[in-house]
Amino acid sequence: MGKVKIAPSMLAADFANLERDIQIINQSEADWFHLDIMDGVFVPNISFGMPVVKAMAQHAKKPLDVHLMIVDPDRYIKTFAQLGADILTVHAEASTHLHRTIQAIKDADMKAGVALNPHTPVNVLEDVINDIDVVCIMSVNPGFGGQKFIKNTYSKVHMLRTMIDANKSATLIEIDGGVNATNCTNLVEAGADILVAGNFVFSSEKPLETIKNLWQIANA
Ligand code: DX5
Ligand code: ZN
Image (cartoon, rainbow, N blue to C red; front, side):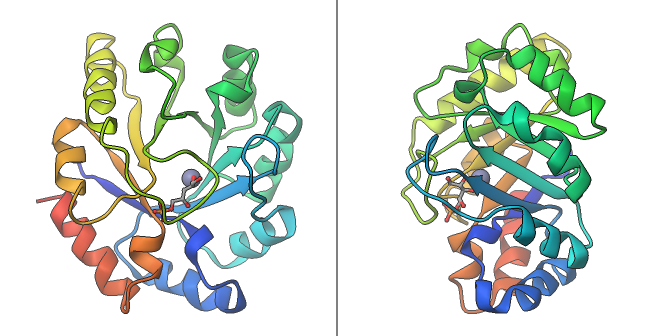
């Protein structure tokens, strides 16, 4: 089995000490920075926008995994490419012409991700699975950090893994929401490749050690 990636969610960082928290991720075993962009329309919360992403990009030494929880994401594909996003993820529920959106992300030289809300079945991606670099399975309803992990995620990941393997696709499976050291083993066994973790990392006393611990359990 390949290496499982850890992507700490900066939504749970201390925004008054953002550079410090970015350096923690730079020094850690983490693979990607996960950046949650919320517009207050697609989800009931507003997070942060372009100036903050720009500031993060100046210090981050690892790929930026940008998760757009916004309506009509096509409007901002070029902007996030210019800001330094390496992976750009849109929600299937927010894209009317998902195939076109995926191609536009790739044309802007980013990896294309598609996120699915807890109620959206994985089979909506059957006809685009070979076009997608990352499928982000939401294991909470998007909008807030620190929510409880939804257990139905395990069977969704398993179904998605079966679909990916049947299509001989290289698409990676990312899990987002409520990930911790207790559920990560089952997620990896079900087929997860990338684990996003916000509060589990940043609410812990020693984030650096927490990341190392999560990485070791996920890659055991
Ligand atoms: C939820 C966001 C998640 C969130 C994860 O809408 O997409 O990335 O920040 O945070 P935790 O790990 O605290 O659930
Ligand atoms: Zn996210």
